[in-house]
Amino acid sequence: MTTPRDLLIITMDVASSAPVGQGDLSLALAGAELIDLGEARALTLDDDRIVPADPQGALGDRLLDEAASALTREAPYETVEDWLWRRGRGLSSAYLDALGEEGGTTRSRHQWIPFRSDTTTLTDSPARRRAADRWTSGEPVLAFLAAAVGVHEEPAEDAATLVDDRVVTVLAAVNDAVRELEAVRQRRSIENAAFDNIWRGQ
Image 1 (tube, rainbow, N blue to C red):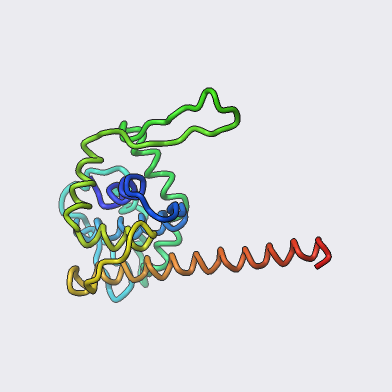
Image 2 (cartoon, rainbow, N blue to C red):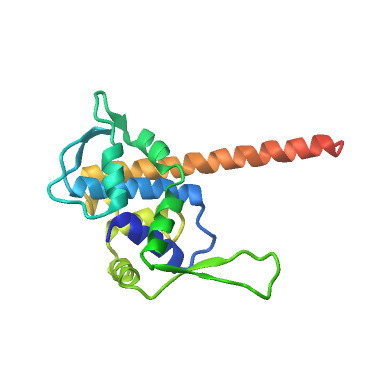
């Protein structure tokens, strides 16, 4: 399994105070891909720029292979922030579809409730058990990514003491991107409320 897949499973499996936004999750999944590609030596970071390399061995995952192929291979290369926004577009749906194709999810049908959409739930799969083991062990990368999307509180220890500089750079970019997305949502909410008030004559 991969960090993006584990993160998706955890966001579906662990209770949180609010549902995880698909945009937030997509940004975090794109960050998780960078972390796994770095572990596979398919890239290095030059400050915050992603420098592609040939992976050491097969990645063994279709979506990670797609991510590796999507890396910008010409200088000055892409920043981590730009990658998150470009690669992250719709990424949560892609990972959810892949998990479903592998039998990791099932759709619950509500035949007796008109107009209610089906819900996607996790099956009791080896992938789910592996993700749960990683989660309960407190693995720091997964913990920080889950915290970025609001699944739980950020670990008390500083990330720099638990992971290497490359991972810290990616985690920081994910947190910044999620905050930026939330700021955009709030601006739109305020603008929509103001527009509604104009129509109401307020």
